Image 1 (tube, rainbow, N blue to C red):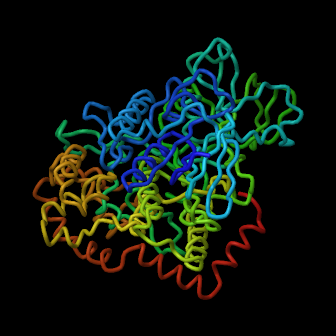
Image 2 (image 1 turned 120 degrees about the vertical axis):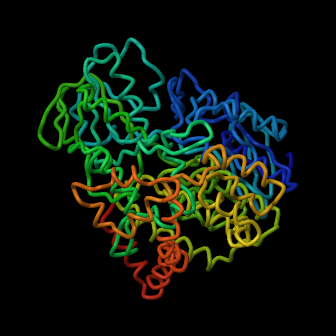
Length: 589
């Protein structure tokens, strides 16, 4: 039986970045991939084989600012949003650059993982056995399609053909002239619906619980290196300054006493309630209180009459679907875009496969800290790549014993706190997504645990100009290398690439005004457009000085500090346990 320090299951993006960081920590590792190539879901295949993966037309909905790894930037000639083939090429280049291919075993499916004393014993489908001190599961979230409709009573009287979105790969003749219903409100649903409008007789999209739609590119124009007036990619509206003055948290005032004034009201002002103003798809979820769909292009197809918007399905009889508003339509095919179930069939002891929010920081097994799950935390809006990299950095330091494993009492407390945060912040999102996190806050928490969180105060006193660019630049994982000056040239090159190296980025100034005068911006006839026009190079500096009290208040008493105080109170008076008991009693959302 071959022995190694760490066994990694899966050679998708999470497995690759985990291998790279483990090797950097001088740990031997083997990566087992069940298919014939690396890349995971980013490797296009004509056949789904019962698993998820990209479609032929798939383009990333997260920009390269948040997608690229900290020490391996995407090529400058990559567009902000990349087709799946470019992402796959990037992952292959990453594997080659860091020389990790020799650790990867392709066409090797792990069928059994067992903990024996202090070691993990792993067997692949060839009958080969391996032994390791640590085990990391990077098998991905898209392995087991959730086909709930097969036992849902609403669909038992249906004669309509039904399929899961994992089986949809590209346009073929089977969709021509059909009346097709898409069930679901995520980005996959939008992608498939838009593509089918080219050949189908009709396309209807049923979103069961409403949905926030978020534009990948905004109407705001900012200076960049490419242009003096480039349309702003939404991901770049993610600076530390923006988060300070306009916190991206759900607007539960009774719990957190905050509102994301600027962002939520601006997006709703552009396109209506929930970012689209389509009554059938609206709900009462607050901004940042529900999983975002960043393919808002679907709104145009609704307004053109090419997509029919509907709410939840009430019943199906024969080939007729009745919706929540009692309207009916005849359908030839239903495509269910309803996500995936998380399962780990290779564990002999299935207690290791408990829900991901029962693990410490959605990552480290609470029962056995020699087991980790990388790539199963899902950002509300953000990037899987950024999360997987920070998780890999933390786990590599733990497994290399550079940092200590938190004790069981601390892990239990943090798991409970994270569940409470989920319930308070994401109560409008289905319980099916048990690993949902606030992207940037979660990364900061992991960075603190791993000892790589940037020290912005130190940077401010050592180099105020660098500090300014660091706190006003778009989110990029390179920030977690700021503690090491040898990376500074590359870090600030990236900041200039996305930011333009220009102080006149007005998107950082607007939130200052809105946070002081939220009622002003709630008016129907808001002078917002006029304000935008009069903001100039000189007034930007002026506003920074005038509204510095807002910044000072946020620095002294930031939202995350208020949340920590709230958590402490909830834990002390047992409110947290009561809240979770109440949620469980009410059942799934």
